[in-house]
Structures are given as C-alpha cells and as structure tokens.
Image: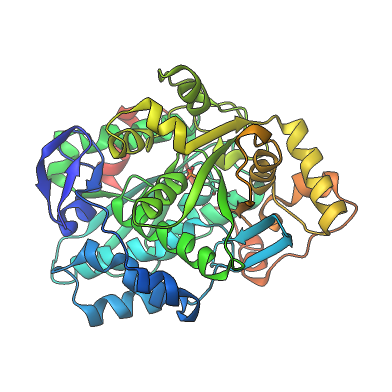
Length: 434
Ligand SMILES: *Cc1c(COP(=O)(O)O)cnc(C)c1O
C-alpha cells in the first residue's frame, strides 16, 4: 500500500516511511491511497474469529510486501492480549468497552500496534529514535506503555500542566527507563504545536531521528479500525441499522471508524459526540472550519480546539461537506448534562460509565427522531475505564469505584516530570540536550 500526504495526493510513500516519519515532509498527514473492501466471506464468518485474527485480515493489505505474514501475526498477538467486549444495555443500545488494555483507555489499541511496528522497522538500525507525543491525557501513557523497554527508542511526552486528572498524571509521570515526561505550562494545543514545530525544525531533524506517536501516526490510526469490526462480530443478528457514537476530540477514533465503513463495515451513521469543544460540529453545520482555544471539561481527553484528524476526514471525502454531513452527525454536551447522563445510565442500566462514554451516550439519546432508521441500534464507544475518571464519576454516583490492579500499581509511585514553558525555544533546547 502507498500512502499520500493530505497536502499532496501525488507524492506517495511506503507504509514503513509513513510510520517512521509520522508526518509528511509538507506537514500533511499520511493517508492510505485506498481502503480495500473486505470480502463477504470475512463478514459472514467474523463471529468465529479472535481479535488478532480479525486484525490480521483487516490490516493485511495496508502492510503488504513490508511486513511478512508471520511477523504480522506476532505483532498482533503481542499487541492484543485483551479484547473489546460489547455489552448490550437494551435491545437498541450497546456499549463497546475499549478500556481493557494496560492503560485503561482505547488508545492502547493504536499505541501497542504502532510501538511494535516502529520497533520492527528499526530493528536493524543503530540510530536511536525519539518519539514525540503530545497528550491531552490518555495518549501519552498508552504510547509510552507500548514503547516501554523497547531497545533503540526513547519517548518524550508533553502534557498540559493542571489539565489532566490526578490519575492520568500519575500514569504519565511514573515510567522508568526510556520515557521522559514534560509538564507544559499551557494547554493541549500548545503541546501539539510544539511537536509539530519540532518536525519542521532543521536542527532537530538533523540531530535526532524524530517520529510522532499521536493519532497523527498512521500506524496508530489503522489498528483503531479493528475494534469496529470486532464490535460488529459481537452485535446481535440481525444487526439492525448501526449508528455508532464516538466520543471525540482529535477525531482519530472517528476517522478510524470511517475507514472501517469504507472497507465495508455496515454502519449507517457515525456520531461525533463532543463536549464543549465543538469546532467539528460547527463545521458540519456551517461548512467552514475554525479552530478555537481548547475549553477544559470533565471529559478532558476530548478538550481539543484544533483536531488534527479533521484534515484526514476531509481528504477521505474529497472535501465534500455535503457527503461528510450525510455520514456524520454531531452534537455537543455540557459537563452538567454529562454528569446527569452518568447518573441516568447507572439508574437505568446499573452500568458505570466514564464522562467520555457518557457524552457518547447523550449523543445517541439525542439523535434526531426524524433521522432514525427503522431498526435503529445505537452503539456507544466507552473509551476509558470509569476508575480513570473516578473523581468525576464518584461525585455523581452513590458508589465507590474499584481500582483495577494495573492502575493501583502506578498510583503509589512518585511523579517524575520536567516543567517547561510553552515556548518552542525551550522545548528545542531540552530535546537537543536531554
Ligand atoms: C483520546 C480520547 C478520546 C478522544 O479520541 P480522539 O481519537 O482524539 O477523537 C475520547 N475518550 C478518551 C478516554 C480518550 O482518551
């Protein structure tokens, strides 16, 4: 498969190059030249396949000629020792739990695969790779966890000071070994800007072998298609008209869903479920895109004012606003409504949902009646374990949330981070000399 840049469709690169570069030389994001349709047979027998087996069939064409079958199988087996179970709440509503990985959020699916692919492609090189990760909360820990202990790789994490939960901060700052955490005085967009600027800085790109690991890396995005197929495999037959609600920030998760749909997954409509950060919703309504400063909310992994994958969605549909609007519906919800929803889901279904998933739930509940297909089935992606956002959830529910063991372990460790201003000059200096 060849990959083009969203800024120039004519110049393409291999999968390897797209992964190791992270971002194209012209600053665009890599996109696969095509999204191969999966066979009918695949869909007919999908219930019998395990997660890694589904993944293998989905990803094959994207890595063809560059990762042999056997190596691919190893990478997938090693990445996915956990599953994405689908929980049926009632006949028309289900929840896809994406938090069973090591860092309790869906980003483990992309991060683990990417880490293994990057290591695979650099196994014969003696130059260390520096992975830069800007995180609004969950990305950093997932990526760092994926790369932990991998030889020849170091990870530099940037997170916005004071804008991630206490637990997230612990997860981001308690790594040993090849991970350095930078606490940036600014917001997520500042972190993202610092990373983007680093890639365009000649001194840095000469001295270091830089790669990115945000959802902008194509090796993080492609594996996020896997769980959409896995969800379909578990959904009740007949499948109904699936409407999938994706709690969205940087729009990576949604973009992967759109890829899956292009590959043949029968989803009628996607919902971009948003918190107060609603630039994408405004784009859908008005046809023009304006970024804005990120607004802090209780679903903070979605506090993004300039979602990078927007470019990919536009590229996927040849910038056709009408088509994009037809496939994606969007709605934005306040923290107040999000809290209400956490309470409602608990009292109605006895299900404990985190604030991100709750925004997804609200979006399904508010899907306009006149647009509902006859056999509507709403599927909400639960993107994080509620324990990760325990404070927000326990404020609403009359219960104490049990901490999973993998989370307890890092809570007792001491925070290790380097505070930096949001100026590129300081970031650059640090990168050159740490
Ligand atoms: C990252 C994240 C999101 C947003 O996903 P995008 O791919 O950035 O749109 C939603 N929920 C949680 C818990 C996350 O960590």
